[in-house]
Length: 196
Image (cartoon, rainbow, N blue to C red; front, side):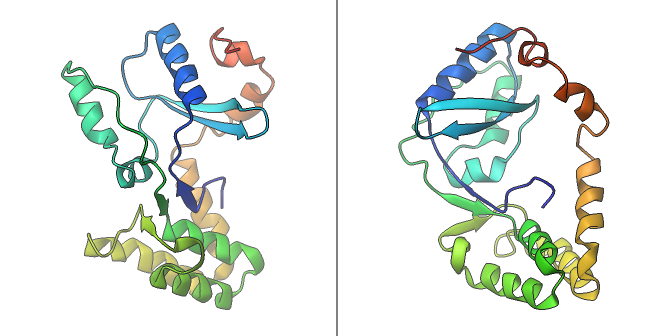
């Protein structure tokens, strides 16, 4: 829904790690940098599509043993951050709210919304062995409030999924800049950095 993933699986790809090191060195970057990419399993190449100078997806990293928030604080005070052991990165995380919004968008059916809520709650389907990343009710009971609000709004009006997603996305998206960026050459978007 709105371009966001419902479920995420931790991965470690050495080529992506090497490319991000090149980008960081070229930019002389010293803080958080999140870059989305597509990975082609056949040729082993990564194609980078979006960069943000901030921490994103911290919960998927956390369930895989990497604490981005702590790393950011340590970097901010000038500490050296050693490389993480990434051999164990295979854990999954999900967003129940994102799942409910997407379920509503399939057929605008209350049954689909209720079915998805049951799958999330019982950890079945894609949620088997997955950790809730946004509203971890078992660890933070108050996170039940936003989850319940979204669920109830969707049950009252399944078509409200689009307006709920649009409101959330408009708070952080590039919005009107997207058409301009899409006309730029890759080297203009990346400030002249070409990764080969």
